[in-house]
Length: 213
Image (cartoon, rainbow, N blue to C red; front, top):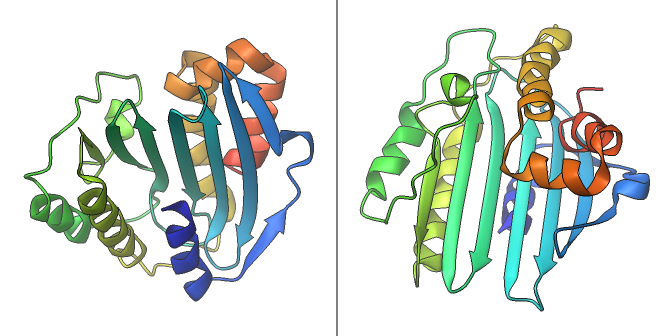
């Protein structure tokens, strides 16, 4: 699915690969992570992380967009396949500098409301997470989740065409979220901090995954 999202991005923006260096392959908690990053002209920073582990029984894909050139919210896509369950998590964070409408994405959520919800729990960043975020989990619903994810992503890209001249303001807002992850923790952040240490995890998050360094 991350390849399909990347194809949509490539159809609208020029993506230039960023060298991930020693972050291109990482190992943590029995999983091997392959990491890519791109500069999307006219959009901002894009990263993709694909993970496999436990003899192929668990797969996890992540795609992050930190839009510094368009006034869109920070976008985080996670897809986890494990134990027969398919989990889709799309989280959107308020890194906006102007007015913004979530109507298109919320319409997609409503369209697929019959799909089983996943309890996201409570986290320190809930106050900046937008209502158009998605959290679904179930068995034998992969095709439906794929369709939902793509429709939701297209609605995301179409939700604002407001250009940003002051990219620093957008990076600063994204930094509040990223620094919060590093300081206060998050599901994947804690795994990397434990395995890689705080210094390498900080470099991974700030430079490669979110592009705020």
